[in-house]
View (cartoon, rainbow, N blue to C red):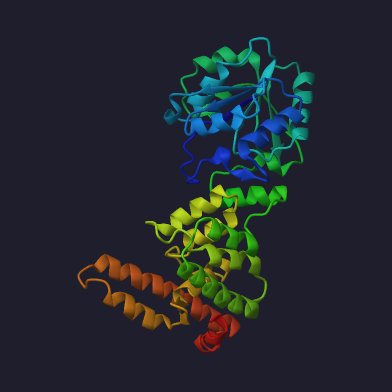
Length: 369
């Protein structure tokens, strides 16, 4: 098996192969799945963050695992396919090709593919399919290995596989359709596997303590959490535990530039993508109409309402912020107006759909102190 772990992980924003999936990094989960299916040699192609990967695998010194570095990893995934293929033993019948973030496939799926591959003479690319969708990994016959190594990379792996004889096997394993290209994808993968997607309150507070978060930032997070939860309790059908964790942690990187992105990356690296998404969006929401109020919108609103231990009307917050911005900085002025406008949009929806208005929220001021 070739496991691809060399990419830049640009859409995710953090290095995907080392993201926690359960108690282990994604790339180690891929190795575990391969071994459970009886795969012999396992080649890990490294590139970006290769030293961190080498550290992970040096702990076990497993003779089944071989690391190969792709110096041209910035040229795209197919360069890593080439790097791995060059290291394959020449006495094999075929090989799996698995991106390290496609770590939800089951070992039973690999065994099924191997069985079908053997039955059909080991001459067709054998792939899992579910409801018309192909997934990972393809099992590629070794007889095409030289063609693979001579392929110029046009249209990547798809371009190489397209003309080859292919056998698609219907398998009831949604895991082989999942990857971790984005925080949302990462959340879906953890949900499928039954792993938690966000920390509980105790874990959130422990993380704040671990990073020596200043007391005023912790206090603001508590205020935001209490305000958001009070609103949520009047709505129902929301994940209050998720809401609390995201509120507590939304400013965990407050002292850094673009703290919402820094906070998102930290939570992804800790294995909490669902909370990371809310933290990413707490400063600004997409410039499109709000269809429904979710945990994301409540964090966004509560953060704008809570200032220095008090609940403040949005119009007052807007005026205070505008006084701090030079009048000729029109871009900053418009940005602030848009953000407060989004909060007002949320508040208007709360009023029209749930009967929750300023009076109901402001009356709770004593409760957050």
